[in-house]
Length: 409
Ligand code: ZN
Image 1 (cartoon, rainbow, N blue to C red):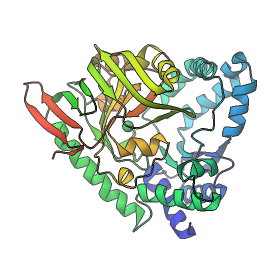
Image 2: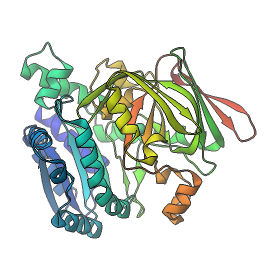
Image 3: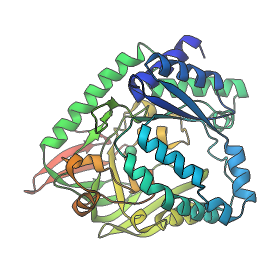
């Protein structure tokens, strides 16, 4: 891939994704084996944007896999005092965080998924209170770069170099960074998403009704105080940033306890390196009561059982069938992309910033309004070409939101 294109993409991530502020620290998380040159472009663009310090946290899926294979559950569950100190330090400094994804979707195969999930759960218990203290206070951005195995998974017939080049093109095209000026492209895209949110928020919807010929027949309750959001968001101190690049969705946090019916997945779900295929989820009074999958049913059950809130919905996201990512016809095997190719729901944690006036509410008030809480947030795709979504207002007025898989307005 051309260096100028990659530098423009790095600039997009620093300026629009993170919107690095003068004097702010930045932490970049990236796989050590993938695109180190691009990581350096990102670091440079963050400095150019005014970062006081850029630190890279190199990760290695291979080493993580070995850790999952060989370590005891006890060791895997530990959070060391220095790790807690690091979190306290982040709460004080609020660095912007860039996550560059490139993992192999099958890269954790063969591990004991139960053990892995239990250890994650144990660590999350310690980490979550720290994370809660940082929520909505710093800018973060998840974006992607090609990893060798990931590229081969997406383009199995290509050579290693050919697959990498094709995946770069697919990532950059989906991220509106292959043509034109990526920053201008994103300004226009953010405006479009903003106007759709404004319309939806003017309707006072209390229910979303999903129907599709694949059997999906689901009603999800919305909070009276809830809002639809999309594209960029703001930190509590008012800094605008784009947490996901790409992002095509308009989303809200549904009201916990109000979901009835069944929904069918329309894409496989890759969870921690394990695939779940052709699954359905049934809800009663907001809670998952039944799941089935042709592959990975045990993993899906494990997700739902991670904690109390994992069996409730945390997100309803609207993505037109005519999205650039779906139209690329590339199955990325990565949620950042595949979730932007289709309407989706998420199990687990909801978004506190999808509540009007959340800035002045306590966590407890937000929970009472219906924002779900959990240590997990797992998206799964339910959109297809005949999905109909109808919004229902408090007065019972029915408003078409999606028809034939696309925006009805
Ligand atoms: Zn989403």
